Each structure stands twice: as C-alpha cells, then as structure tokens.
Image (cartoon, rainbow, N blue to C red; front, side, top):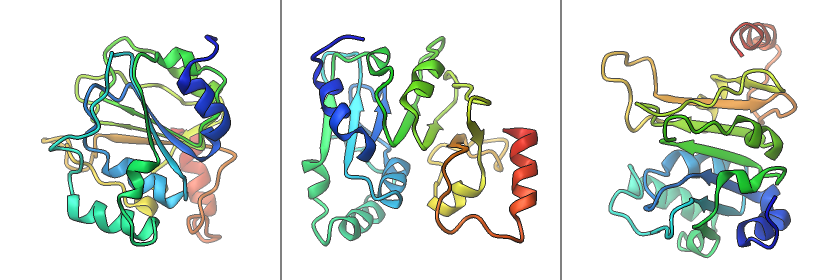
Length: 205
C-alpha cells in the first residue's frame, strides 16, 4: 500500500464516518442515493476518489432531485445544507487499489469501467453497505459471499431511487445494494418477516 497519500491519511482517521465513492469521475454528479445513505447512517464525510488529475465538485447534474436533496441536507446539518461542502473531500490521482485495508462505512461504485475488478479491495475496506448504480455497460462487482449479501429491504428503508432505470424492465432499478451480514439497519428487522428475509438472502445473496 502506498504511504503518505492524502486519501489514505484522511480515511485512516475518518473512514468509519465516511461514505467513499470509488472512481467518482472527473465531475461529481447524480449523488442523491449517496446522500440518502450518508444521512441515514449519520455519517460525517463524503469522499470522492478518482485516478484522474482532477475532480470537479460543481456540476449542473449534481442532484437528480435538487430540492429534495437540499431539504435532506438541511435536516442533516441543522438547517445549514452548505455544511455538506465543508465535509466533502475529493482526492484525484488516487487509485482504488490504494485504499486496500482502509476501513470505510459505506462504499459506492458508480459507472465502473469494464474490466475494473475491485472486489478484493472492497472486501478489505469492510464497509457496512456497498451501493452499485448506473450499471448499463459497466462492470458489476460480485460481492456474493465473503460476508456480504444482496439486499432489497434496505433499498426501501433508505429510499433509494433509480435515476436511470432499465427502460424495458421497470422492476429492475439499475442499482444493487449489498449489506454486510454483520450489519443490521434500524427499522428493518421484524419478527414477522425475519425468516423469509433470511431465506431470500441465503438463496440470492
């Protein structure tokens, strides 16, 4: 692992309160679901990393639902939604592989280039949740096994919404959420559906 990289130094200290977007691209955009997870888990930092030479935080497509995201951030930051930018950290010239063994609370993989296989790095980061979205023509990370299960209940719990659903299959949201088997979100586990949920995760996860 490379030493003394800004992203590594920051996440060694703050990874447990950070959502990390792997390969976020040169322009931050469509981060609505990222913020829904970040605020639901009461995380502090939004971290974007990319191997490119720069990352532009300002984008006309930053949010799919700008008004809704402003309200969400206002609630999260006590009426001061601009505090989100004070807690945003962007690290260009950083490879995903640089973050091996650096713990992070949540990991996002958005529009991953074909043939980018990050499973082992993600496993080593031990996130509670892993979100993959906008999967058209992109590489899906296969996290089945190794303590992760594909989950549906949390999608509804966190209010995750597709901004680019499959045109022909409306039931497929074009996003996948993985959960660590050791993590349980508040308000999801109920005695009535516990067995059914466990069976579905055992078969599909």
